[in-house]
View (cartoon, rainbow, N blue to C red):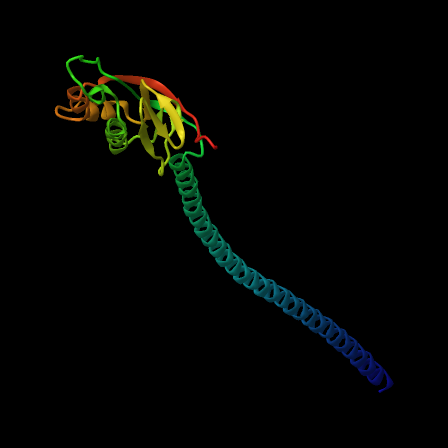
Length: 233
């Protein structure tokens, strides 16, 4: 009887030992699974945070790209405006220079023509010597034709004419803006020499009129003519 009880205790002890081992092993497995689950949850949180950060960075990049496009457009508009202003300033500078030239404030140089007017040969049978002298209206005819033909500057015997110059006949001399000059009268003009030559030589024009009035008329084309600025008295 005692041997039977002793055998039962041994069996129960063994069973409890195995059961305890199984419970301990199961507990360890459960803890390991919980650890893995926690590790997976942590990795997911990191991945989610990185994805959200990437999305935010992409949105920021899009905003920066839009700002860049706007800045490039503003720069392009500014360059166009600057180019327009540069052209305007250039035109203003060119106009100012043309006005100074027109007013005779600056010396000029270029191609042109030279016209020389001399008194005609006196005819003793003609009682009026004035019929053979160069008068102011003869000079006016030449000067006016030169300006009409596009002359940029005109001078007479070296004196530059301005927009308000006057020419008077005073006996054997002419007076230009208060300065007197004797014949011959050398009129120089800067401009298109071909156009001015053609205008003066046209049939029935200035040259024919002056020659018919006994004035010696000489016309030369010049490659380079220099005309000083207006004289100041």
